[in-house]
Amino acid sequence: MTTTASPPRDLRDFYENPSVPVASGPSRSRRQARMLARALGPASAGPRTVLDIGCGDGTAAATAAPYLRGHRLVGVDWSQDALTRARTRVPYAVRGELTDGGLPFASESADAVLFSEVIEHLVDPDAALDELRRVLRPGGHLMLSTPNLAAWYNRALLLAGVQPVFSEVSLRGIHGRPGSEVVGHLRLYTARALREFVAASGFTVVRLEGAPFHGVPRALRPLDRLACARPSLSSILLLHARRA
Image (cartoon, rainbow, N blue to C red; front, side, top):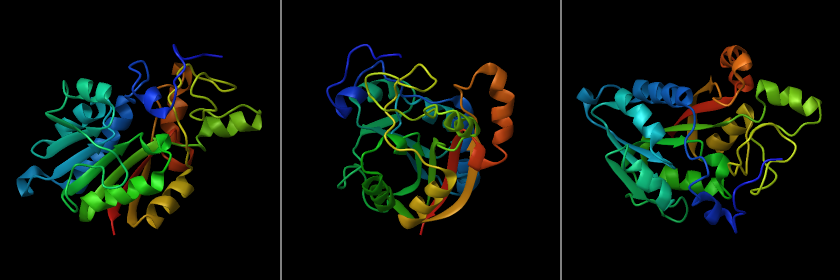
């Protein structure tokens, strides 16, 4: 069992702890950025506003920036610690919440939203997608990524009676699963569940792709990359949807 340095009092306390990881792997970030760049087209056709909701320390936005040159990229997070770090990597980073109009943007003001490795941390993902839909213009792009509950190795782990990777039973320590970091996942999705949930929230699903997970042991990484060809087996789900 691995434990956190000091037990959190609640979720907010957990995510304000500087030792909690707030960045995900660069391979996922690059794949997602390429998907978004293809969807938006070149900035010469008109710069677009892209919101990185749940930007964490700004690593994903900084990775995406070269693919989105000319577009306006704004990071958003509610963790003050994460925002302090994000402002060293992105030109704009502001505080916002994902419920009850908590994002500091007018309705239908954004052309695209990056929503990277956030939805699995939320108590109320329904309200979050309602808020994302509010700030997106009609036809605006949602680029969502999240761990895959049905990743190829999780299927084997479940057959062996082992807690799946990405899933957590405690904010204080790791119990019964591989890994060394407590990251606060509350909800996990399969490819089918994610498609259905996003569609039910007022979006049209355009494409679903897979991405590898940076935490897979080195010897298994070739298999993890191969699994990306079939998103339902991949480590990470990359979903492109548009506001209906």
